[in-house]
Image 1 (spheres, rainbow, N blue to C red):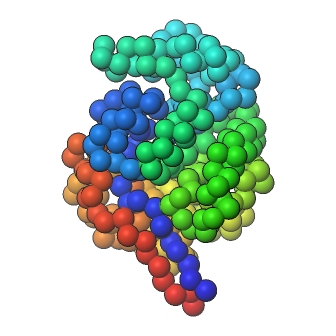
Image 2: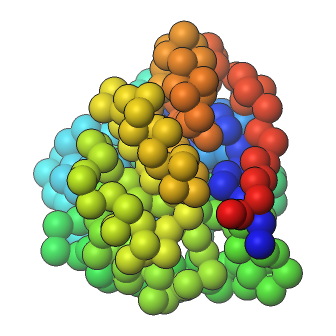
Amino acid sequence: MLKTLWPYPKIVAHRGGGALAPENTLAAMRCGLAHGFHAVEFDVMLSRDAIPVLMHDEQFGRTVSGVGSVPTTSALELAGLDAGSWFGDAFAGEPVPSYAQVAAFCRAQAIWMNVEIKPAVGFEVATGRVTAALTRQLFAAEIATAGVASRALPLFSSFSFEALMAARAAAPEIPRGYLVDTIPADWHARLVALAAVALHTNHQNLSRKLAQQVKAAGYGLFCYTVNDPARATEILSWGVDGFCTDRIDLIGADFSLGAAVVIADK
Ligand code: G3P
Ligand code: MG
């Protein structure tokens, strides 16, 4: 049996366009693409009416102005908010996009997606379930033809174990990566429970030894958010398979070749 550890691109634009565009917007996706990135990470949260939209913060105030929150606002209302002005006048009026809109854009442009399921507090299971069910619909053709370890399918990740378990139940064909700030002692058991293909972690808390343990166990290893080329080179030398970056101007999509790593299973 062959085990494909990381069939995905190695270098991924964080939140769409990294530091060069307002995060989690279609403008960010276009920016990443303009810089040669065919791989993006972005954050998905549920609106009040349970529509997955792109947003990092549950509470308004940073990327959209005013007082309020994503889980108490409808998708229609969110689509009318300005998610671009905070970044610069050139992006004024850039809306909060739905996940369906962004997924359609990425499919049309052959952009691989790391969909980070980012539930508002208390909505962990619903966010995993709804995001996964929609992804399953959107990628029905790819699910029918692609193998599970294929870059034709997106990869879910989440800091919420519960959200990923719900995603697994709703769309078992879409692979999952367990996302952690610091790798916990029970990481292997968690990956087994999720039937995950990868561990995603903060590179600042990763050591060469931990990287080797994850790789030796047969999992993909992905890091966030790597903005220094020297650090990127270092962690890749440890066996890290890929990472997302805000500095898409400094670390290009071709920083390292995105070839699949295939090893013989023992
Ligand atoms: O998915 C990697 C990274 O995006 C996780 O942290 O806070 O940037 O969503 P955050
Ligand atoms: Mg994220």
